[in-house]
Amino acid sequence: MVMGVIDVSFVFQVLFRFAVAIFKYAENRILACTDYISANQYLRELGSKMSDTERLVYVAFHEINPFPIRYITSRRAHHLEEVRVR
Image (cartoon, rainbow, N blue to C red):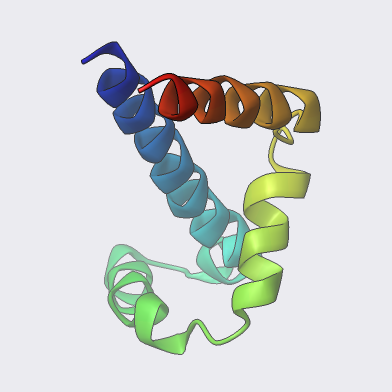
């Protein structure tokens, strides 16, 4: 059960990073909107206009408070050991 909670927490952290990365990716265009209606229209169309997924992943994991690779490696090792024990 604890392992499931940790995994869910990690998934939400990753999803949140992607949500923030989408806003960061489009930050200049969003700030260029002069009124609520144009900002709303741009945000509604933003998802369908995202085509550079590599850039989005880079922004999510390298530009926005990067994940420490040591943390990811230690979590992988921990979960691998848990799986092997079972």
